[in-house]
Image (cartoon, helix red, strand yellow):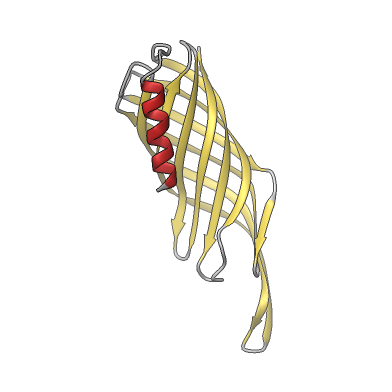
Length: 183
């Protein structure tokens, strides 16, 4: 809910200021993303991993675009008995925008993501000690929503929430902020 309020405040603020025209065509960018890993099997708190994501894509017009992304995690997080580390991620997505103003474009995004990470768990259940150290791949359909705000004709910023993986008792999502440059 806080993210939605923040996104609304950013949209209103930037829609009231003059900005650059929306540039259709190719773009590249980078985002700081805080990945969040939840695992209900181990009943752990949400683990948060800092990561960097590179984005490249093409905006066909104000309403339709495509993106590819690749990224890597910087660290790992542990809470209770669970530890998660993200090695890398990549994916391809389609983006549908609905311009609010010349420089403000909220959007929805969907596609497919692959990630590689390591899940570790240690503990005791009914007096029996156990240890899990599982390096594995996560693959799933992904979706999210965000807002692009153009600062100039070629430079823009973005704020986004994305659900990358949601299967069985595991979920990986992320909140990101970044910059992009059209050329």
